[in-house]
Image (cartoon, rainbow, N blue to C red; front, top):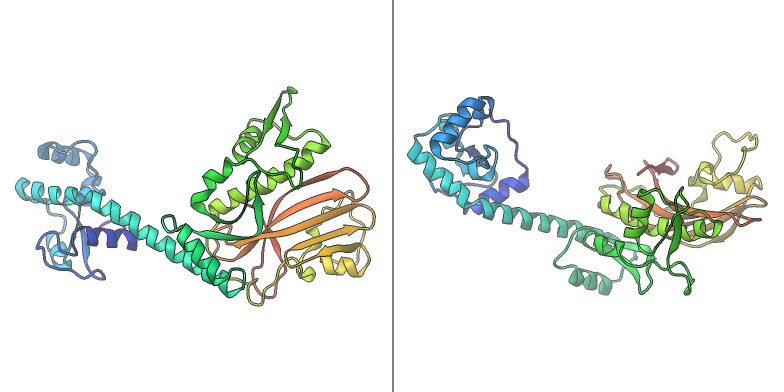
Length: 373
């Protein structure tokens, strides 16, 4: 029994590259039932000395791989079973290896096109979901498909746009992310502030304007030192964190937040553990408090609320702003999650900081849980 396993994409690519024909008989074969044969038997991998002797006898170089496309042929099931692990004579082996090698580039090309087709299918599903939820108009769907016709990987519609020095972006495809990392970030409404200054333990400073520069500086040990710089760094934490999360994001298979649509405005679903409480939390008879229960007992008060924004505060202490930015599967479990921009601040002071948070709902009867990315 062969050890190598093939994905549906690899099977289709090999089948198409060989014109849907058996490599041995040249008869048409069905995509659902054909076999893939190793011209040189896969069992040679268990006998390195015999493999090296065989490769030397056939004049094969070190780049030849038993599991590579240069050693694979589609074939009729009966032919494959009949051949088994028999090593053919040199003349037919040379012929069939040459046939397989001649199709290798075609196989790789078909692999890329099939993946693009799959990506486009995922993008269409996502856009259809946005259209059904009223997040996109039919004209916007058409525009996005035209814009990304050559790069149809997952496309994300942002509820809250990304703000750069020269533009605002509301739609992000994975193919965009590398370029977006290099754009200078706009720091809120501050037209006269260009970037943020970071400091390291040796009191050396560096000024950064883009996510690429910011991430490299943080990796090198720089950090926001002053209260002002910490606040300005929040804009980088938001935008850079969002781009990192989108790189790993995918289209969800299931959602417990779409129908009925729930989010940060559903305060009974938000655990109070998400709130930036400073100091020791006071004793409470509520063993599993939510934002709603803390509003009811007077601990919290809502300052502002919209479809994707919540500003909530203690009477004297901390405040929190949460902005829903995008929905996707951020941890690969197939469940739709919500990415938020968070900003925390002292209601009577200059403290302010922020970053991203990702919430998920495991089922329709649960409360939100925070994901660690």
